[in-house]
Image 1 (cartoon, rainbow, N blue to C red):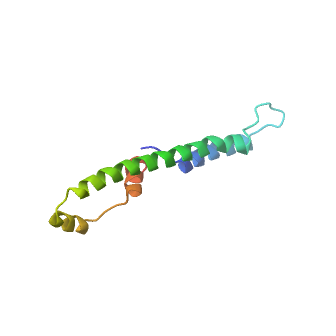
Image 2 (cartoon, rainbow, N blue to C red; image 1 turned 180 degrees about the vertical axis):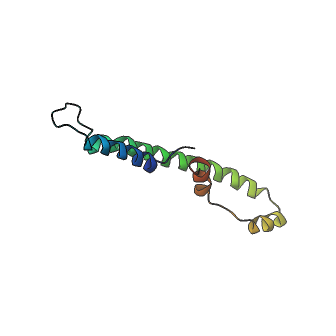
Image 3 (tube, rainbow, N blue to C red; image 1 turned 135 degrees about the vertical axis):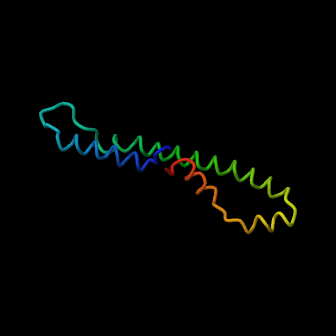
Length: 97
C-alpha cells in the first residue's frame, strides 16, 4: 500500500532529526533547510489530492450510470445497503493497510 504524505513526512522527519542531532558544525554536509525538507511532501500531498479527485469523479460517473439503469425495486434494495463515500473507498484501497 502507498503511504500518505503525512506518513512519509513523519519517517523523513525522524531521519532528518537524527542527522541534525548528530550535525557537526564544522561539516559542510548541513542537513536541508525546513523549506527544502518539506517541499517534496507538499508536492506528494498535492498529487494525492489530484489522484483522489480524479478517482472519485470517475467512480461517480460509473455509479450514476449504474443507478440510471436500475428499476424502482433495485433502487429501493440498493438504498438499504451500507455505503461508503468515494473518498473513503479511495483511501481504503490506496492507503489503508
